[in-house]
Image (cartoon, rainbow, N blue to C red; front, side, top):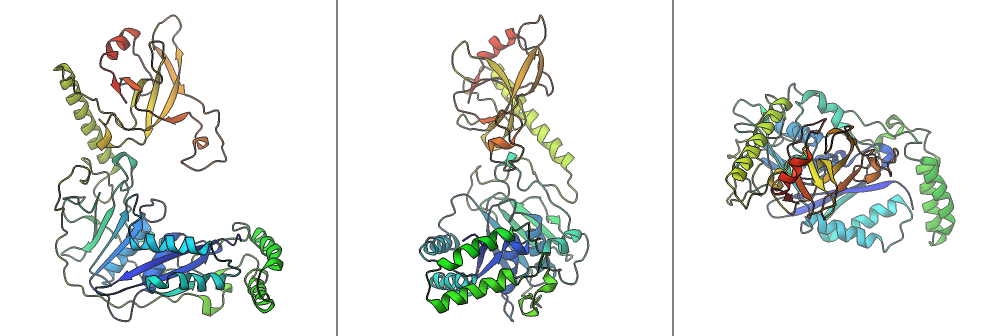
Length: 471
């Protein structure tokens, strides 16, 4: 049944035991997953301090978990001395061996085997199915705090920690106070990286002091969560509920209360007081100074931080990052040129994101040479990898009259399948220009092509063919 309900849960682990809390919420309360996760973290607090450190494991999603709202919230817990230190780790792809992943798989697979006729039945079933994981609570959220709007004006915005040019970004975030009581955040690519970014004490997180408590997030308008569609679906299905008559009437009465009796475009103020969340008074934790952040016991280039710190924040601008990036790439190209001059037969020229490349898209002497731009998907650590694949944007060539070769102008090739209504970044129809994945037997003929125009004569192509970099 299409009821616009989502589930989130969190595990609270202590030294000798652990427990889980779960929550269900309809999308009508305009809530995203990080807000629910933060409610669960607050709900997990006990009247006594939990300790000096908070560790949170999250999916590595840049739109919902690895965002400034989560960083600011954990920073607020440190700022108010609930914890002396907080960190969260965005788990890499394939994290199927964690306990939360196992419990989620158990939950979803088993829910498919049971008919669920009402939200209250869903909450009871979730509690039962997660009992093997020591769930102590499963509750419905009728409203949520707007933690983002509360903390956003008080924090320095950090950027670049999720950039695709340096892989899948930073995975570990560490938040603590310095010797002067200033809350700072440090980041690193993996938990095994030997250093943190930036060097030193970290980026200052707060520019002003948060105070009070957050407001409730506004609920969605009825049309935004398709209330009429949901009501129509429920109305058609209720007569077919395979339940004893008394239970069927109880389920019907519950939907009547939840949907038909709900005020039009219901606001949080319209909720009964019993359904409104109470902002907790959190106990202060053990705030002794934490030990120095540990580095890695292992050495591996794939686990280390990128050569260029991609993060911008207080004292580090985007212009600084771009200048360091251009300097690094220029030095890398100069090194490749020097190796080519020395006749190094093992040379594989590095390709970086945003570069313009001349490529053959098919084998054979008659294959055309076309201009492409590296759109995304190639990481710095893969710049010289023959097996790397990446998304390219193709350009069409308008030749200069009477001049042979690739003299002329280039424009992005139009995507014949472009659909302006498609907003998903992974959908090929979302782009007006032609984009496609590369394959390993394509040839890069010449890498250094200036943006906006191309002046590579045909004679240069024949010379460059001997230095072709297959990809």
